[in-house]
Length: 192
Image 1 (cartoon, rainbow, N blue to C red):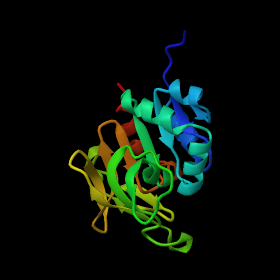
Image 2 (tube, helix red, strand yellow):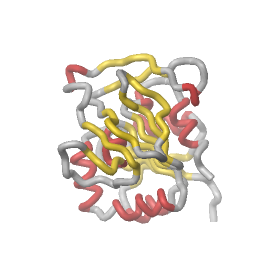
Image 3 (cartoon, helix red, strand yellow):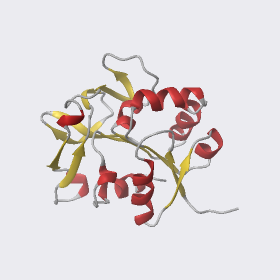
Image 4 (cartoon, helix red, strand yellow):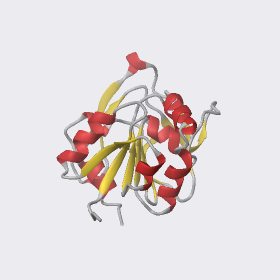
């Protein structure tokens, strides 16, 4: 039996190839996952950006919610970017779409505007070091409220955009679209 650590990237829709490339650049064995069995075999999971309603509906249709919740409860790190942040949230303001509900956060979808309002900015993220992180926001959500066990690691315009709750990370931006590997490395460092 192999003891190699495999990180899964939920491959239902969204930025799957970009996350796979980023993890591979870090020397990690990463693979797209689409089934309950593939998810259960992972040491960690990335839920990519994309369309949160579509990913949530497919997650429900293919019976993937429970395996992802089980993975989180086993202590495996889970990183949700953009749509992934929305799916991790307990509360999605103005929406009853399917979600994992693992993080004690309330998110607002498309909070920074539509596709044409997408932007890049430099964010100060002290846990990642003194250099700012270039953050790409595309139809991005933001967090309106966090529970007591959630740590805000970065904010933008007064709203948390990078948070941690134990082994769970959620970012409103797309770290996979830049050359900066620090968000993914921080995620990998959470693995037991």
